[in-house]
Length: 182
Image (cartoon, rainbow, N blue to C red; front, side, top):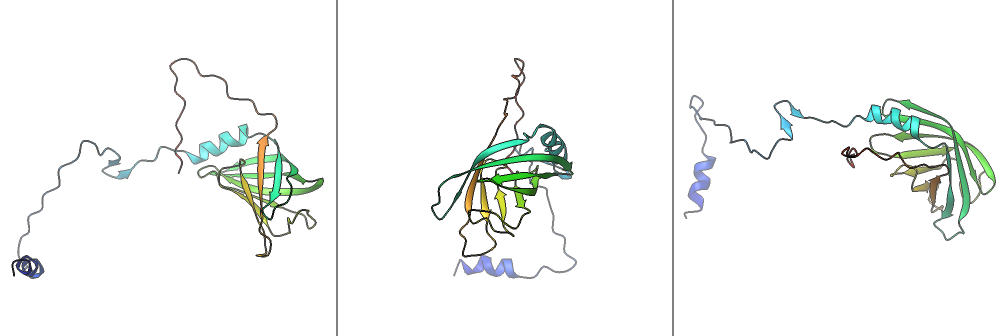
């Protein structure tokens, strides 16, 4: 019967006028992520969007391959306008898949690197139907085709920048900025 007694004592009601002392728990010297007002986020997605809009390559080449087992088809993406709008980047350009060109419109989220490209033409090739879109969770590096119908399994689009130049080397002692994943 000993285990029941503490349970009964904990379940007993405290009288309304009684005083219950409260003491703050000791602060941990390791916990510096919270201030008295809450956590501080130092990542600036609006600033990153402006930086990406200025530095994003305008020419991309790669291949598209349907998930159903098709052959890889050459793809070219040309971005005509890249505009930062808050933490989003508005993309407008032309997508050429296997010789068929289409105007394309899209959005790139500077905080999460999520990318959506929507072809704006009715006649596409290789199962790329109107109403579908390309969705990338790592920017332009790897995208999947989301078909508008369940009977189309979609496909994979892999793009690389055409005129990519690596960033200039940093002076000695200067550390590259670290960017969080989320």
